[in-house]
Length: 417
Image (tube, rainbow, N blue to C red; front, side):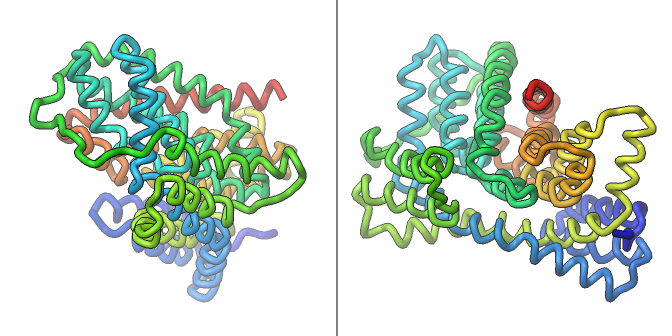
């Protein structure tokens, strides 16, 4: 298919969107504005620009519906205390000696069972700060342990970025979650090593930042009910040939969590809370779809492939590189993975790159520089441990190193297969 827009127009659109986000414009509107300006500057005309922007947004609807459905699970895990109970159990089991590993593992598990990565960090943060105080660990080290654990959990989770990437490549969600299991373990090991070194450097948590929880947490078996339900339902396809769509499996996991913890009367309120947490992501994906529609109809993917050929690089390199660049451009794992997957999945397929491998590498690549200051994750995670912006900025290279290790491991898995 002949490209409708020029590469310069597509790049300009992305650049404008980034600048507008940095200028504090609402990200979804910034992406829409970037799509409009990119299409017009790319030579497609107003009618073609609007048609491809709308088409791109429409292509996001399956992912948006699944993400909205996942709000039931997220709300249930957070409001019933299940996420906090799981995190606390892991920290208590490993003890003070392995405090950094315990905090990283707790965040990994909370994120892997379906809680968004920023919410996972916020959930674990009060426990992590208390552990850090008792074990004399620094705030930067303990935050990096949570962020790295969250990155490891995110690439094996039924979170929005995984759902959107699976949709773009038309691969099974469970298969994509499993494809990055080894990279997640490598990321966890790298997190423990780097955060362990950093935990001996920097300020300790202040006394006023250590809070106590008065409300009782659910028993461990009840806290596990939701995640276990989701895992079983999603596993029915590879195990028994029965397909349960995430659109159904994720909210059923939330219902199981609500029933097991005895919060039936608050079930609707918990679902509403979960919806409030995923609405922003869903709206962001609609805006992302408009840019993806322009980029996908541009000459960008062909030019990038030509550049790789000129540099004599194999075609599969396009997958991780596009994930890295798009996530950095949007400062969002979800938006970056979605734009990269929507834009480059056809080119990767034409080059003979397996759909599952391409999806896994893009997904892993989107964790490298996704936490830049023009995104919400940077500020939400810093605020969770009362860290100022300058101190938070100093963590970005360490986060990128963990994401890079994850990506290299994903590439290695693809090459071995």
